[in-house]
Image 1 (cartoon, rainbow, N blue to C red):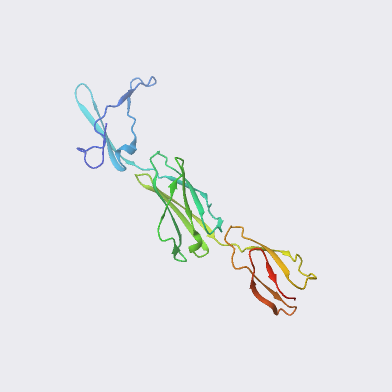
Image 2 (spheres, rainbow, N blue to C red):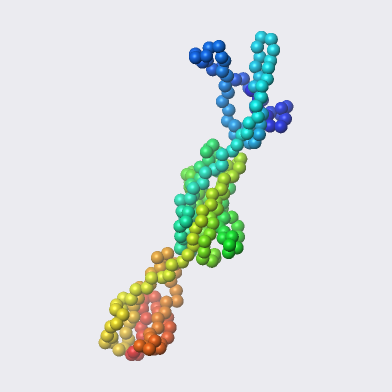
Length: 242
C-alpha cells in the first residue's frame, strides 16, 4: 500500500506490505490489512493505492480520502458560560484542554472582548499549563475594562491545527455592604452629647479595597447638620454635640 498527496513519486507512505487476515467464514476470500496513524501522513486529501500481484501480473486500485485533524477540545472550569464575574483583580481563568489524538497542546491563549462596546484586552493573553495536567490558566485584572457583557475566547494549537471555545460572561461590581454597629437603630436617643463615636462595618464581598468611607448627618428637614466627613479605618469621632 502507498499513500500520497499530490505527487505519487513523493509519497507520504511508500510501498508497505499488508498483512493477510485469515477468515474461517469465507476461506475463498482473502482479507488484507495495514494499521496506520493518519496523523503521520499529513492532513487533507490524499490517495491510497493498493497493489496486488499473483503468479502472472500486478493490479492496482486506489481511492481518495480525506485525513482530518480533530481539534483540541476546550472546556471552561471558571468562569462558566452565562455567569457573572465581580472580582476586579487576580481573577483566574481556568480551562481543561484535551486533544483527541493525544497530540501535544501549545500556544493556548485567551481573548476577552465586547463587540458592541468595542472594548477588549489589547492582546491575546498567554495561558500556561498547570504542571503536566490538562489544566491551562491565566490570571487577569478586569479593572481596566468597563462593566458589561464580554466574550471569553480560548484558542489552543495541536501542531496540526487549532481549536477554539468561547463563552459569554457578565462583568459587574457589587457595592460595599455597610452595617451600623454604633448606633444600632434608626431612631435612638444619644445621651453622650460630646465625643460620640459612630462605628460601621464596611465589607466588600469581592475583596476589593475599601476607600473613601464618609458620613453625613441630616436634620429632620434633610438639611445637613454635618456634611460628608471622612471616617477612619476604625471609627470616626465627632467632636461637639448634635
